[in-house]
Image 1 (cartoon, rainbow, N blue to C red):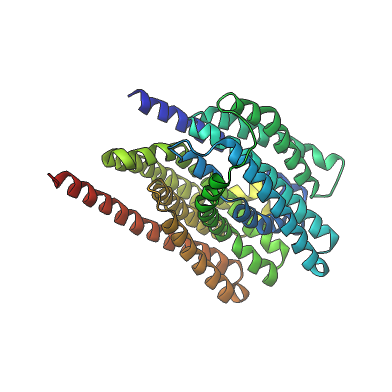
Image 2: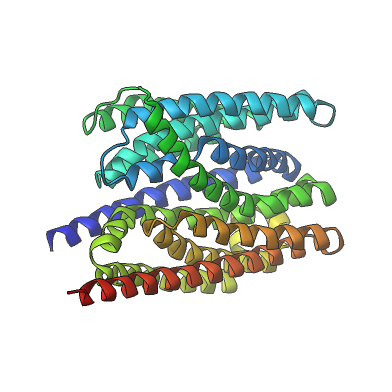
Length: 419
């Protein structure tokens, strides 16, 4: 009973922290759409669409590896040293990419790309300390950290137009806020739970790469699945259309961030239950699915009835003209959330490759539809690509999870039948 209460409190803190984080980020985008043209907003969103998947691929998903390490072999220092190496690689790759694309991007776009890469690098350092809070079920610390970072960035964006009309300064404030909170809060609080020492061991490094890179591929595919349409939109329709799609996707990303907070809070417990008690595993998974579906239906109802008014109030009439596409994007997001829950349950079962395959299949569908139809049908094709992609990913995750659970039950039955 004490464990269940603790899990509920921990999950509540995860939800609160991510709600603050998501609410702040959405408000930041709202301010940017009010203060700058859709072309300028589209340039920033496009830069983030280029950098974010690349960052996740190179940095790998070390937090999940650290959190699900029940043997205690992987230390925080191993993750920190890996981050030092991978962030250096990320910076080098971005410099090479900017050099290759210099004739197309120029100094302005290249600077935004590099700034976005630096922001992602700083957030990857924070991710290590977030892993400590998650593993030791101290999501209150997570919530405080997320809320503080977001508040600082939000204040920066509010006052930024008083001294500059260059939207790239938003990324400078984002970077500064992340570095300050990581150094003065995350590092200090995590250091009270575990030793914070950067060190390296070759065998642990190979283990981190062996387990973290497949997960990194999975996260990259998932992020790329949300961003890939913007590459086709930018090429066929221009930066204003990127802004419209990117803003709609930002609301979906807010939904996925909240759901991810819940999933990450229960992930260690799901992994434990899968190893020890299948009935508890299914009960906890069912409870999360039930609560999430109810929230999704409520969100779809609100957007279905008042989506145009919401966009007009928050982002302006220019964005409100695409209210029907906004509703379809929210539907795609709800399908995506369901797939995330099932997919993280697969991760708790240590079926990492199956999770990657499911997301990869959804990405293939997204790319094919965008490549074939965005040029002819515009944003409508990109939104339908998101719906179909989420549908395929969720279906694939459900099939894999059923297969894993049935296999586990069969193994348990055979084991109990042995004399």
